Amino acid sequence: MENKVKRIGVLTSGGDAPGMNAAIRAVARTAQYLGIDCVGIRRGWNGLINGDIMPLDGHSVNGIINRGGTMLYSARSAEFMTEEGQMRAVQTCKFLGIDGVVAIGGDGTFRGCLDLSRHGVSVIGIPGTIDNDIACSHYSIGFDTACNTAVDAVDKLRDTMQSHERCSVVEVMGHHAGHLALYVGLAVGATAVLVPEKKYDFEQDVLEKIRTARLAGKTHYMVIVAEGVGSAMDVAKEIADATGLDPRVTVLGHVQRGGTPTARDRVTASRLGYLAVRALAEGKTNRIACIQHGDYVDVDMEEGLAMKKSLSELSLAALDAFTGA
Ligand code: F6P
Image (cartoon, rainbow, N blue to C red; front, side, top):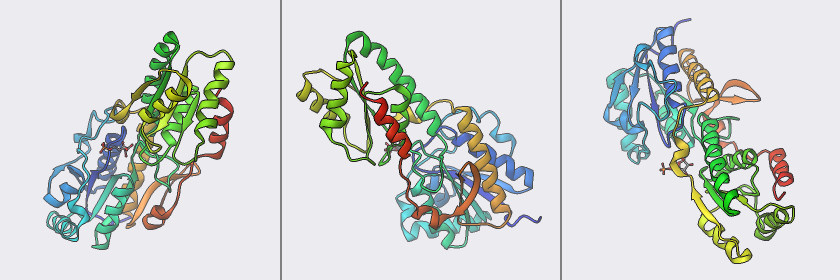
């Protein structure tokens, strides 16, 4: 098969996620394997606008599969949102002979892909975000590592909460989505979990859970709050006012975005990176390399962006059964 692209660029954009490096490595190695020239585009779409690129052969990605962050840096580009910025990026592609781009990131990154493809550059997106909120893909690179980081932190918190018989309110990331909070809540055996996808009743979903746990003999309580619900501080204050408990608040923050990627994230990133370059080589464009029903597939980018993702009903129901005990 003759490659339909000659020179591709790979970039990471939006919030970084553990496993992005593994995806970059997979793109560079697959390109070399197929005989396609590959460059790294630094600092997201800004790098494409400014021609901020670096050569990326199979050798230059040695030793990164196990590293968190992204060797290409990441950014959110306001300039790329403008027609002028997009035209500059297209000019850079023409000038540098880049006829295909692999963009690793979230929804915002993929919207950037659409803009670029309208101007004739082939693009494939790879879901990379700890939020796991890319609707067309069951899984996004970084989610597993972020879950494990958060679970590890909450387990540590539990030790001291248990010793002092306290209530802990932990805020986890997720932007507008509650996937991270739901998984973390299930994994740590939380007393209560609040996610933006499910309207909650404070009395029933928090206070009653704490009361039931107390009646069952528990003397410490772990409440997980997705950032999309609001501030953990506010939730803690409400708990304090209603119960007389003196909760401690922990906002896990950006620590959830760092760290050595888990095997799951490395392998997923490697497969998606391979799939993305193969798709470009076959002449595909405007696709998102993703996972559906356990299969690695590519879907139309506009269709993918129009999809909606909800939380697993089973997980939510199970959570309701497990909490407050
Ligand atoms: O999208 C990933 C994410 O970490 C979200 O969970 C969070 O809301 C946001 O990025 C934080 O972004 P920033 O790095 O700009 O603070």
